[in-house]
Length: 497
Image 1 (cartoon, rainbow, N blue to C red):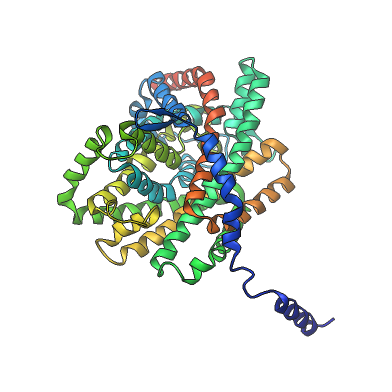
Image 2: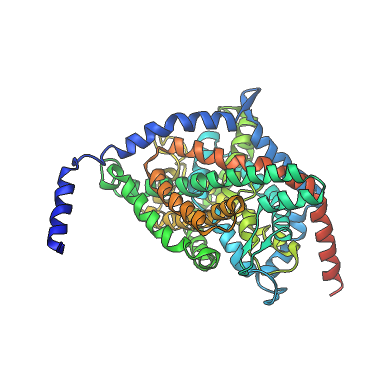
């Protein structure tokens, strides 16, 4: 059969498909997932009434973990900060060490998984619902998260698995299974490890994928004319393009991902921070009042739903979604580092919540507050609110933000695809077919994420992500003394030259 006949048959088949077949795809996806989103969110974020607020137990679980690690490791988030910078610069690096990537590239990969639309859209959601005071609790969450990341990532390197081909597999599932086996708790360790791996797969599809696609698309729709445009009516098309681009990168594994993110992350962060600084300089006279409103609103939020406790919970929840401290995702990326000293990568990981939350999230919050867009912008939410803040100074700034947002979303998605792959290989072994199936499913979920409403995406994303914290923090508590011994030994080596 010649090519003309094939073409004729193909055209005939297409002519049988209704023109409006795809017009309702977005609506059908939303209708199908809406009940699931609501039920899952209610279970994961079960809350107890406390005064005016509903206190979510999973968020309290994470707050306690951050406080514990900060006190147990004697404020390592501050005492080891300078050394973390030295390690990233390669001052103590040994190229012959076991691993796949440098400290800088491991940090870049992990940062690309956290620095994303949570910094743009998530901060806006926090301030919209909790007022400026939510910013204070986000910053505090970032500082406490530094200590948590240190503990997680030290364990990630210590218990990582070196494969026969030289590649590395690591993460919470490995230190839960191996670490607790050493503690004489093999059954509990395996149960927690497999539970974590399952949650990680779902989180990679949700917060690491769907949320990123959804919010980056939302910004593009917003700056291109809003409702009624091609992207708004056919959002699945954006998801499809996004999925294809992700596919090209993730096939290459951690080395290609690290290569891409080590270039993307610093560039994105610089563009975003410089843009935010321009907004703040223009609104310089409003900064003192903004800072004051952050502190006043944190402890006595007048008229804010939930009062003091409500704002605290909201700030911590959005910060954790952004920096993922206590979730157990970052150790997967950090485990690939070239080092023979587990503590070194734990120290490097301190920078992750600092850059993500203390610096970038705080700058986003200040931009939203000093421009005043968080009040009186009815119907504008998430990343759109941040876009409004940037656009209040120069009309073309939202285009810069949209460009950065797409890059943020892309880098986050490719990092989370790697996390999901490692969770899959932990469950099924180093089976190529299992990895390939997961990567295809990951790309499909990019299309699904582009078609969902923001509320449903946030519910599903948060639920999957926060579930990982349950088994992970149990491991952190039980293995904290192992981390302390590793760090003490490393300090002695540094002190002895």
